[in-house]
Amino acid sequence: MTPTLQTVYGEAQPLDWLCLAPHPDDAEIGAGGTLIRLAQAGKAVGILELTRGEKGTQGTPAERQAECVAAAHLMGLSWRGQLGLPDGELADTPPFAHALAAALRTVRPRVLVVPHWRDRHPDHVGTYHLAKRAIHLAALKKADLGGEPWRVQRTLLYQGNSDISANVLVDIGSVMTEWEAAIRAHASQFSGGLRLRDGHTRDHRASPGEVDVLGHPAAREICRAFRSGGAAAARPAGSVIRIPLHSCTVGPVQLGRRRLCIHIAESVFFPTRIRSAAQLCKSD
Image 1 (spheres, rainbow, N blue to C red):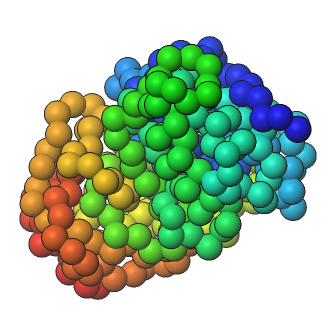
Image 2 (image 1 turned 180 degrees about the vertical axis):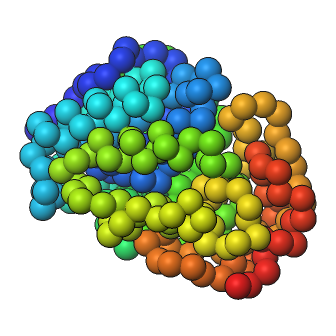
């Protein structure tokens, strides 16, 4: 089957931010709060699912697409699309890369948000490598693709099932209610209670005092961790606040409280009110 870009919500348009999701609900879990903040700030924000999640244990492709539409509305997205690649088979292959590159030329995102390569799920790892090639192809004038060449300006990697070295933190404390609602929209995947303390464990809803995706009381703000290969990250609601800080290794999102440790020298950009850079690198 030839991959075909399908619009499932909104209209295809040039986007400020686009999040690639291997499966339905991955974008909400990994970057949902950040995407909501960006949309609230007036940015054109979209999500592109690469597969329909057809091999997942729970939910049919039709059910999951309807859930994606509901979540998109709750998040204030400008567009949501489906590429129709085979679930469980995402990899850096020429046909897949050409399909994704053509999609990038269609919606022309300035910033692309991609799963981190350090993840236990093969499709998440495959999406990272596939995105690298697609970004390259989309910018080539002589690539055998339709549309005009497009160069993505910046890429952020979002956390999945493993620890990452994070150098970008985004304050999502003001949108926790909206974030939870967007995740709950994927009802086939999240039945019963929902716990958001460290991202997406599924047993029960944490109390407000426990909700902290960094798992550290010194954080004060509720932040989402990303890895950027560039020198800056855009603050959703305004200018960039730059605080020199050692990069922190952030543990897997499904775990409980964890240590944050100094990893390598970096700069971290906080859209938060955290005053002391050293606070986040202290162990519990």
